[in-house]
Length: 189
Image 1 (cartoon, rainbow, N blue to C red):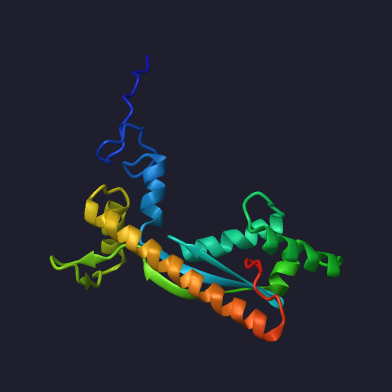
Image 2: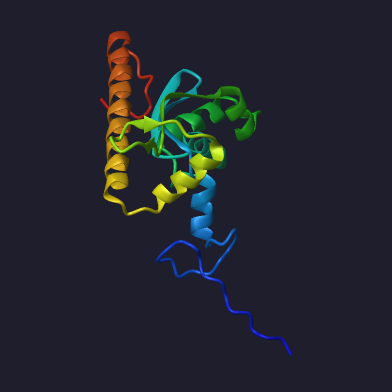
């Protein structure tokens, strides 16, 4: 006769979900694997047009996701103008698959990046992490923290990224005006 094994509970304080892996529930295990990601503002280039985007964490993952969504023609979760232009490129070269069009025209660049979380001394001066493992541990703790200083730093980073994104969009919008073009896909005149 088998005994029912009592389900283990996630190690994160306050979480009541069952353990998925590494002593954590699936949500917190995913957070742990993504902790330490870099936030940033990025530029996607498709042939002669560009798209400026921003991600609060995992900027490279975000870019990869955007590429996958274009290939899948996923209209619900990708910028409408970006997808429309990608579809136009596919129509221009029907002999190529969507994946081949992405390989031919999709390029990217991170224009500004910042660690999502910082280690700081008592005066809030940033201290460099000793290694990647320390960064993962501390940033995971910050990820699930309700500490007011952590919340404040997250809001500051978001404001910084939004201001950088806005600045870059204005820059490309001005280029559009000067050259009489429409190169920036997420700008409406």
